[in-house]
Image (cartoon, rainbow, N blue to C red):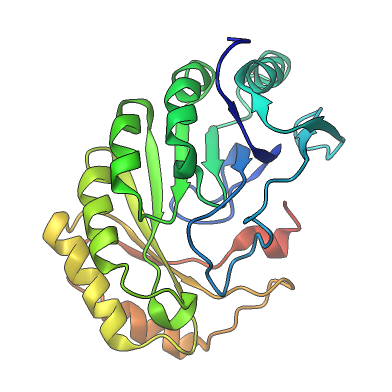
Amino acid sequence: MSNGLRAPLVECFSSIQGEGVLVGLRQVFLRLAGCNLNCSFCDTPGMSETPKECLLELTPGRRDFFKVPNPVGLERVATLLESWTEGWPGIHHSISVTGGEPLLYAKELKEWLPVLRTLLPVYLETNGTLAHQLAPLMPHLDYIGMDFKLPSTSGCVNLWDAHRAFLETASKTSVFVKIVIDQSTEDWEIERSCQMIMAVNPGIPLILQPMTLGSGAVALPALRMLELQELCSGLNEVRVIPQTHKFMGQL
């Protein structure tokens, strides 16, 4: 394991999942650097550059971080997480592999994930645009949370085909779609998103995530949330969930 591939990490810590269908569950967060998009609402700015050092939490949830140089080897991460699972058994539901966009490092993850998955189930958080990079990793993933990036809220355009291809691949495991919404969100964007999900599998959950400010306030009127949710009537499961970790004070 010591001679394996290394990856550029931002941080590894323990916290409460604040988004999506696994909201409220305790997870290990393994954040990789870098992203192929530049969304206007990104809550992890500065992801375009790899930090010289990665922050690792010594004790799960205690924020007693220490620094290690990048890139980081699998052995370093696995040893840390082994100490957590042995010292605090049963407190974590899964490992959230997140970013940035973790699939930029699909080659590294193909080596890492089988090892990490022996410790905890693996949950991939992704912008849902890199279907070819996802495919080889599917045997090692238990959950996938993918975004649909709406032009109005993200500033990203022409991603519909990429999202459709990604969802078709991701649908072979437990996947849900997350869409960030705000006052600029247009009805047609939600309708088109729902049509894409229905064409793959109407049972795939959809999370409408109202834009959540750093203070925890939700920047979308309650009535508008309901109006957007009503456009999704063809799907089996639609939830409206803000970023709950922000008002809980979690990382």
